[in-house]
View 1: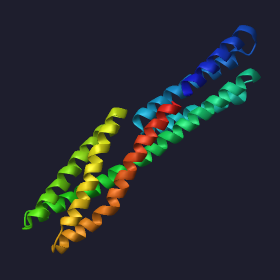
View 2 (view 1 turned 30 degrees about the vertical axis):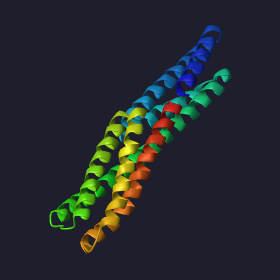
View 3 (view 1 turned 180 degrees about the vertical axis):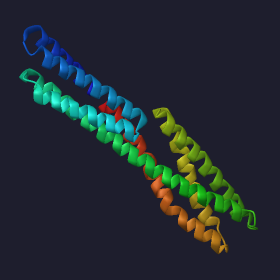
View 4 (view 1 turned 135 degrees about the horizontal axis):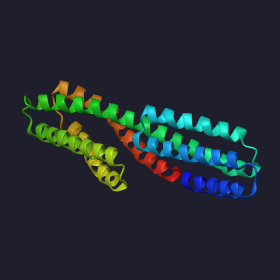
Length: 217
């Protein structure tokens, strides 16, 4: 969407430069559009606050160039491009919030998995030991797959990350069913449900956010 908007403004600017005294104004708009697009693309890749501010600064310069332009024929394409950039920024920020949610939940689940591993060293119920080992292994596999997708943003890795997450959820259910008289283990398992829900939701929102970013940039 952003690229189509850039092309529309560039074509319009070329027409203005060919047949109007407003050539300098048109050139400034085209330059600011290109800069905003580059900044937004960089922010889409990094998601960090520095690049976010760079996008906002570039958009402020674009708005200033729009205000100074006297060429009405460029107003429509530039306004549509500005809306596309705003949509891209919103999608990036939504994804960024989802990443924070997923990472926080992942840290909590890693702590819980470690606590379960420690308890299993003193557990005597073979069913509980077996279920606990499956749970810890399923979490580690799911977490690694999620982190791989987080780094690559490859849709294929998103599909790969879904299966381990489902196995992790199934292992948590099985562990709860196998737990017997170990009250501490029961408390730990009870604490698993809430961060697991945030972990699952965060991963789903990251995938959806990446798709939205691809559609808007």
